[in-house]
Image 1 (spheres, rainbow, N blue to C red):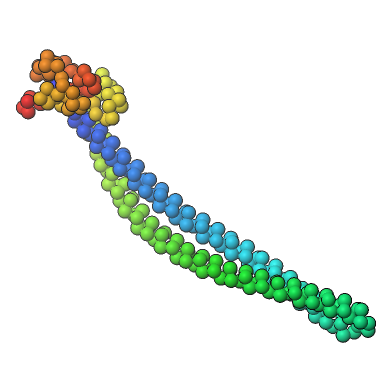
Image 2: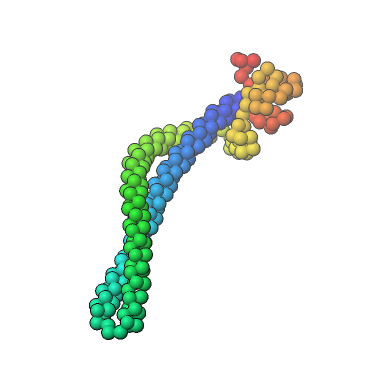
Length: 237
């Protein structure tokens, strides 16, 4: 049993190392996903601003078309005004011209506002495009580093999985099954040392008779408190 316990401890060290590699691997994958998210968010923001600018330009063009129409109306009314014979008709046309000129002024003001807004938005888009380009460049560098890290981890995992398979085959299947069940229940730690009368897994005192039975190494001994497998290093005791 002692030999099997040492093999289980070796298996546990491999499992813990594999757990750590998988955790590190997932962390790198999460970092890569976050980089993609940041770039996509920046790209969507630039696209949204471009959409705003296109809408502004469309509104501005509509105002300019309305302005051109009013200018034509004014010009026609001014020509017609020169041909009018009666005072009443003259005043009516003059009133039309005045209203058209007022609307023209309002349209010009609105066009000026739209022009200013478009210029500000265009400047913002230029700045955000520069930020996006910088982010994409930095992301490319960081992704390269992450890929290198993933490659290293994958190589380590491949070697550890081979070692795990070899070690597992050297242990009775029923013992491996029990070890795996304990690992799931005890945060990955199924085999612990018994030291100075205590379980190093839960730090509880072990009954003297149980502790003494570890020296015989005949049967599997579990901690009565945490149920972990107890291993005694006699050269240390």
